[in-house]
Image (cartoon, rainbow, N blue to C red):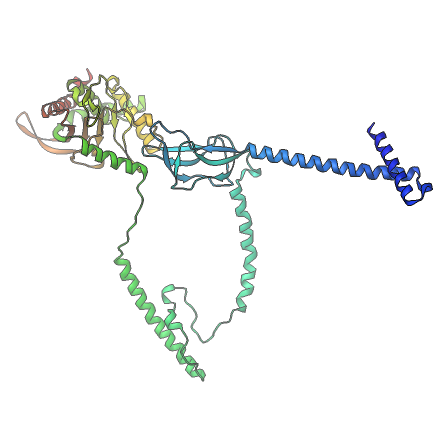
Length: 477
């Protein structure tokens, strides 16, 4: 039907053309066929152009809708914004699914933003050190497979640069002879200190008329150059020895949060610290007997922290106020007592001090405590802690002894009412059954909130702790 319609249209067009030109006799079947082909060609071109336009529109619409906008993730109920600390990828880079693209720093933890699927980053909506809010656009990802050869677009762009450098070398060599050089001037030295200063190399006010005057001018220039270079090197060495540079670095969100909480603790609690000394002989002997076996069977290194954590949990049963907290309006009007112990363990990291929590400490064995502390310490150093790992502590232990601290006064970790400070073990003269012996001694400190604990309760806690550590069987039975 379509061919017949085209044929009829071609014939009518040919007759019309012939009538207008006055040559009806020239309208032959051949002419009709040529007219038909011409009309069909125009029709095909129009249809093809229309299809191409529609295809381009569909592709454009598809490509624009395929791109995925990745937003700032939800971090916690109490966190609404953070600082974009680092872009791990840039525009044009290909990323795999779940690959880390950016790091957002909050006042508690660092949050990794990962790619939801494989694709290429086509646009970013924030710069490093910008404050970004939860739910805001962060970057645009175009889903797709890795480029051919497995190289990212950033790596591909570097290849032409290397070829361009090779091509530029001959040009530089050709341009060197074109430079005018004064044979009478001394050759420049590779040493920057021996190069003539601008003042010494400047031309004299009047041009010399003879070559001898030119030579003497060059000689005087060289002499002044050597003098200026020696004086500059002397001044540089003096300035280097007396350097007084300052480097100002903006505090991270975590550092600011730590400072805020420490000042809050000092301004809120009535802090007081009491001390005691513990003979570590029995604990060290216990550790020496069992550490190799426990390491072989359980894969856990037996240290002092598990023993002090277990002893603290038992002492808190005798002094429940040390495991309580003050809550309520204002400075607090309610005491909250607990029958469980969630131990906050102070861990030092490159970004600051964090306190991950060991839950239900009172029901754990020494090996379980040691394993839990080791796992949390590793997560802290690898920057993998979550908010759940650091919330809800009821009692805190800080071990400054690993850094060589002899004694100190730890600051309360609110809302907790007490914190135990462990310190380095040192050999001291110790009276045992009326005789002086050399014993390994550790000084322990308990900082407590005097609003909640009296001196008697704080001293009782340390005495109980000392008894459990110095008599290990009483703690394990």
